[in-house]
Length: 373
Image (cartoon, rainbow, N blue to C red; front, top):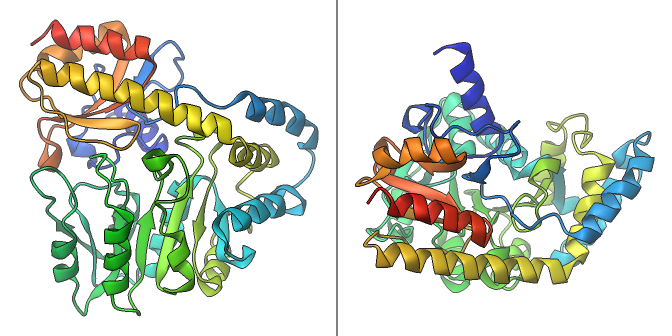
């Protein structure tokens, strides 16, 4: 692979773009690769909030520039931990602030894997954690999803054996958009052996009902083997500021903090203060969900009316069957400077993941699809 393609792949991984696929499964030709330096492109492949950040967050960011000479752990990180603790009803020693949940998952994977055994996760999933442990010699037991791309919890449970080091679920799931109801995920978590870590990635949980009611955070006090990761990159619109967090028992958090960049110095004052403002801006969160739900549902209906299968989604993206037209669509996408995620191998063959943009952006994409089917 030449240097240019390596850089392209790096930009995809850094942005969290279409992570369910290995590098071989990604389309790396010029038709769909992410061009993060070009602001004129329509990015419908990174699951970003097209409406964010909010005006209140922008104001906070501007004010935080005056703190650029201060280290974040002195003031901003403690304040953010306090806000998160109040939101979730946990103690501050159960919180690890990281540069996005991406970094949290890599740290967790590093510390939970001893280079042997296996981990259990769906075959259609966000792969950062599994790839990290695979590099350390841990085998990914890929659990086949149901025909509707939903996660089969029984298969997940049946796959656990004496060599399993952890279980991982993204809920709602990326790249499928499928959501497991809180009651079912709670029952599943309770069924996992108490000594086995279970990681629930809730990067998109706010899209379900627009609040915390569907999160399993309250289980943390009951299940010491539970780990939850969250991010400000999605509904809060802070993907470019790289901030997220992990929630777990204090012993794990203390250990993981030593593997962070200098004890949480990987997050800036600007990012931490923006996250605080985002948590407090309930109006923006609700309006984002309403707008994204409306646009997603309309776009899904339009595609369905065209005879294209779209899988149900609770998130700011949707998975669709694209095999019948994707080769004709790719050059048109490049000409229009529109990026979507197209799968080429494995479980993503003939599938595409499309992020929800503005109504205008989705209409542009819809017209391109109409022109090739």
